[in-house]
Image (tube, rainbow, N blue to C red; front, side):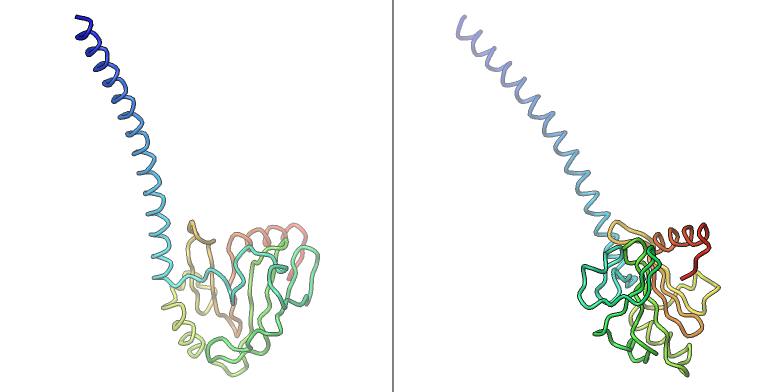
Length: 192
């Protein structure tokens, strides 16, 4: 009888252990599913952005980064909040389009917000559009105030970005920082 009781107790202990292991397995499986869903979301964002040719940076300068992280920046102008820089080694072209000078990089509160460049006089809107479409595909023109525009949504990988061409100027900017700067500019009556 003691042997039977010992076997029953052992079986009961194994059942309790198995139930605990099963509960842990279910919890771990749930966590694994959540992690896989997050990875899937990131991969979907990435593949969508690749398909939409979203710019994660401008000429190697990542959105929200600091100018000090990159060699060759020379301060052009600052008001203490917004600082404009140029880099000597930058090309004075966008694709085949000649620029009047190298691009200007604007940093708001030390974070990369905007790049601007003026195309050479006599360059047509059509020429600019053809060159930009080679890199960024067809414009979605969500901004009717600009002649040509592209807009990419925020994702887990990068901020919301807008690229536009209007009246001889190509600009690309981080929307969140641009909104912050606009609020600052309105309250201080400053313009950049």
